[in-house]
Amino acid sequence: MFITNDIKYIGVNDHELDLFEGQYVVENGMAYNSYVIMDEKIAVFDTVDANFTEEWLGNLAGALAGRQPDYLIVQHMEPDHSSNIRVFMEQYGGARIVSSAKAFKMMANFYGTEFDDRKVVIKEGDVLNLGKHELHFIAAPMVHWPEVMMTYDAADKVLFSADGFGKFGALDVEEDDWACEARRYYFGIVGKFGGQVQKVLEKAAGLDIQIICPLHGPVLSEDLGYYLDLYNTWSSYGVESEGIMIAYTSVYGNTKKAVELLADKLREKGCENVVVNDLARDDMAEVVEDAFRYGTIVLATTTYNGEIFPFMREFIDHLTERNFQNRFIGLIENGSWAPMAAKTMKEKLEGCRNLTFANTTVRIHSALNDESRQQIDDLAAELVKGPAEPEPEVKSSKGFVCTICGYVYEGDVLPEGFTCPLCRQPADVFEPVE
Ligand code: FEO
Image (cartoon, rainbow, N blue to C red):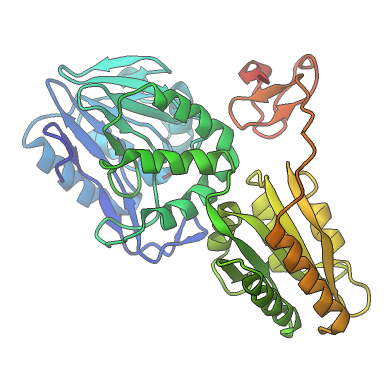
């Protein structure tokens, strides 16, 4: 595939994959993208999944047309992109491998070698000259792993964005709506690391970008503002679409009836877009992306073993581990003898920033009755009206943020010997909170 006169696509499509990264259903398959820049020196960008070695080598040989590559640029070490590093290095004995220091450590762990005598270690701000094309390296830690580097080609104004701007879906399947599978991919894969994505977007804002070449999904070359705006909304945990999303579980159908009644009431009261998801039957990753897409979310579940129904517990875990925040929340609980679900859901969401809970909580004792129907009507009215103006958040100006995973330590100074409790990185990767 032609991208510019000098840049060629040599990636592959995977239609055999059952679950991407062991958990995401990919009905339209998956693309593992790889690129070549043909210049005085030749650079290859990333390899592909282990199941496509021969096809990828064939694509590469076709693009090279008899020439030899000089560099393999490894932007990301996750095996869907790194699995053919060794075979490439064996086949092209004159090539050197260009990557971040962290990536070389991972290479040793995954493949038993850092290619010491053929490695070029690069960091943020370094430049590799191919002739006409100058490659500028941009650190993008945690988008999606800590070693990730993106690359900007100043000649053709191309950003090679690693997993950034990627999506589920093979390139030989036509999809009208890029955002649908890009959103599910984004919140599934890097949703937790909004702060790191924001940092990369700040760096990208200083570049003249005409084309984005991600490691998954289509090459983006038109209306780039649309994609950049969406990434800005997603990574700042903003509200993308008008509407109310209800996520529920139901054992015998009574909680489902309550949800259906709430959806009807919401529509009656003027909410034009009510999205209802059954956590036991709908794709969990789709529901997670909806929770980050809409500003008002209703959680409805059953008290179960003194806690909540397992699918709801899993769903809330998905939200909290992805830094869920900035939302208006309504709760519906069902419990035949000791309803605990609303209290449990609220407790599980306690660590999330800037959540506002509706004053009305719907409590169902087994099945709907006049009282719970009235509560549903009250909740619908509250949700349609929206949250009261929040008290201005008093922010502590003291603290340090981990530049790798986003963990914030609150305090005047970092304790001696401090390591990040989330990603285990040392104190020197922390920056003062601005
Ligand atoms: Fe596409 Fe993070 O690997």
